[in-house]
Structures are given as structure tokens and as C-alpha cells.
Image (cartoon, rainbow, N blue to C red; front, top):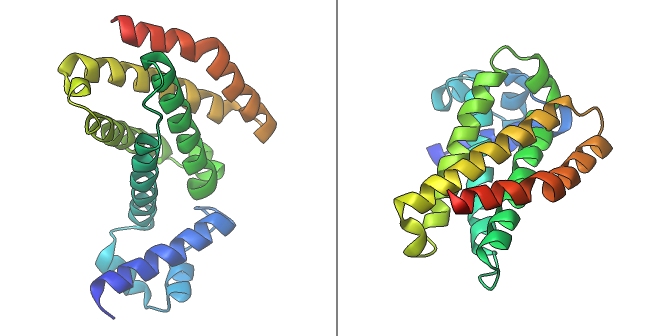
Length: 193
């Protein structure tokens, strides 16, 4: 097998197992078995199980962010456009936590806070880079600063209610509340900075 095929095989196996059993309950041995390779081969391509997870997430997020940016309707006014973009990004962040990482990892792992912080920062940079590709006007430093403000505030709020929610219905209620009661003010603040 060539290197790219082996790496893809590892990622596919890990993704299936993480989704089915969660991050903590999936071992490197199980990933190797599912990928039909030796355990040592995984470490040839990834430093750790966490590195496999990170690669999976970044691949998923990269495709999702490009889709988010490119499927926005340009006819929307700036406030509606930003609010729509932020809501989709927040849902993407939640989906990543829910489907790939699993809440057990987030709530119980000693490394989870640092992992999520790094992931969140990478998502922010990816969003800004994707967003600024759209038009020259939006490449201004001031606009990027305002968008960064909006993204940082939104992701902090969304992660806080995702961590404290007990059920999926709580999460849905929190998303609706965020969208109706908080996001409009964040968008207005970002536009007027």
C-alpha cells in the first residue's frame, strides 16, 4: 500500500470506531485491526490516537467550512449574512464535538480543554481565511478584526452551553436561545466596532 492509502485507511477506520464507540472507548489496537495494518504502522503516520482524531476533525472541518462559506446567499444584508454564517459554524462545532469526539472525551479527558482550544483556534483561522477569499472588501484588517470578535464570542458561548447541557433537547433550546437572544447583539457589536 502506498502512504496515502495507508493513511486514509487509518483515518476511515478511526472515524468509524470513534463514531460508533467514542474516542475513549476506541483503542489504537482496534483502529489497526479495522484498518488491517499493524499497530506500529499507525505510529509511523500519526504520533498518537489524539493526532488521528485531530486530522479527522480538520479534514471534516475544512470541507464543511468551505461549504459554509460558498453556500451563503450574497443577497443577504451584512447582519443576516454574518448571523447565518455564525449559526452554521456553531452547529458545525457542536456536530464535531458530538459525532467525532464524544462528550465523554470532552468532559473527562485531562487534555480535552487544550485540545478543544487548539481545535477552536484552527477553526477560527480557517473560517477567516475562507471568508476573506470571497471578496476584496472583506479582506480589510478592520473587517477581519470584527469577524474574529464575532467568532470568538460565539464559539465561547456555544462551547459553554454544549458543556453544560444534559440532553440534546437542552442543546437545541440553547441554540434557539443563542440565535434569537444573543447573536443579533453580537452581530451588531461586530459591525459597529
